[in-house]
Image 1 (cartoon, rainbow, N blue to C red):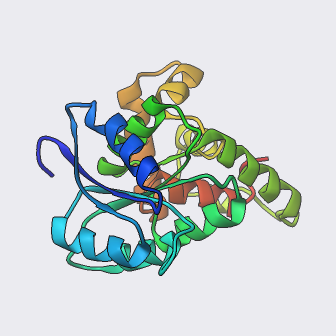
Image 2 (spheres, rainbow, N blue to C red):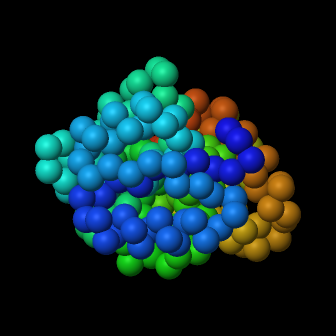
Length: 219
């Protein structure tokens, strides 16, 4: 990855692409290198431009954003992280996006600084979920899951502090918020998060959220 994070914008509405592009281009650490209006076009543009991050809409003609995300993340010649940027605050879209390989999920109502943070997080391999979507997924997971027979087994490889960090990540807190909660430095939190991912064999913190939900650790 170069000095600036290279971004491709995918949305079937030209005005929205223009607005998002203006927001991102205002930051000197970001560069918009391509645009697409359909999922199929997105796959082609990403292969041509080789961006670091793709901001992906969901509902589009020709091929939707979820299928485009699957194809992009499965392409061994592409190393782009996908952030889904959508109007829809829907848990099924979120979970399907994560299964497809997205590392972030934001709503189009998010603040400009949240979008900037999401793109940088994705480029750094950290991922970011919209807090309002995360809360909805947690609520659904808590309501739907069976009573776990044991919550200790999934956390056996983790230290007590790493387990605390995993739970806070699953509740939608970012690194700065976790640092404030545990009264430690941001660097210490990043180290704990890295250890959690390595010990549990997870790709990124978004997978950590899903893992925590699946193992009943968010209640």
